[in-house]
Image (cartoon, rainbow, N blue to C red; front, side, top):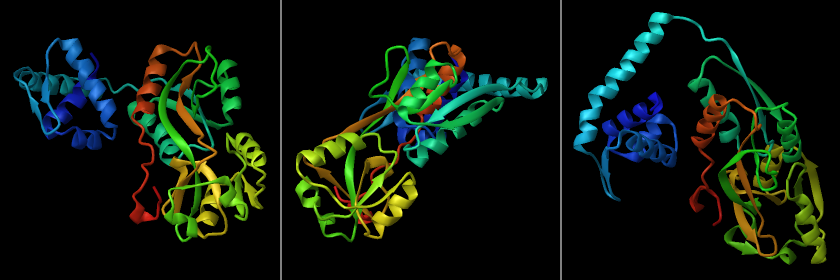
Length: 297
């Protein structure tokens, strides 16, 4: 049993709502549900009655509250009484440049909150670069695309998303849900230099005899987004990089997806691996806004 599980239990006991408790703890509901289930398994008792409409403490859950509060209070007193700084530990983190900002910024922030004695180094790289550096022991963990990771790199899936055509919400295509490659023959294109599926997309366009006019090729996701929103051209990007003012369309001939996940070097100490995985699993991935915010479905 760990103190995180008890902290999650008390938050849920106080709010009797998985939604409110997850928001208070700044974790996802699946992370909270998993922690509660693990705690129930460890104690051998059901702590909550839950269905689609309500969450209620069981008698066992009610009896646990004062014990959980006392254990957390004693731990805080012990920390204050010792007043000994933990030795710094280093965690070298690899980040995919095409991660949504909410994940790229949220991951190190959650790690710092979980362990203030952790010294964090951030590094960016392509999926192939991050994989190689994990295998060579130059990185400890990474948030990366996991579609092609080999067996000797342990990983956990976190998020799956589709690639979409992004156009301005003012563009004539914005009212549509889907389009064909042939619809894009006259469309100026903004090419994301770090797109992980650019070769597949280019090959598919060539197969259909369509060669869009490239207006700009840049590694800057912000520049791409600004130009798309201003209706200077279209771009092909994963859903999590969409912003208000864009419309997203599926391209019939390009049903591409990507899987993002948490990867670690094989010999990483279990304590650090578990710390990193818990932080990664609590990340919020940018939700896709509704049509009223300028997105197409």
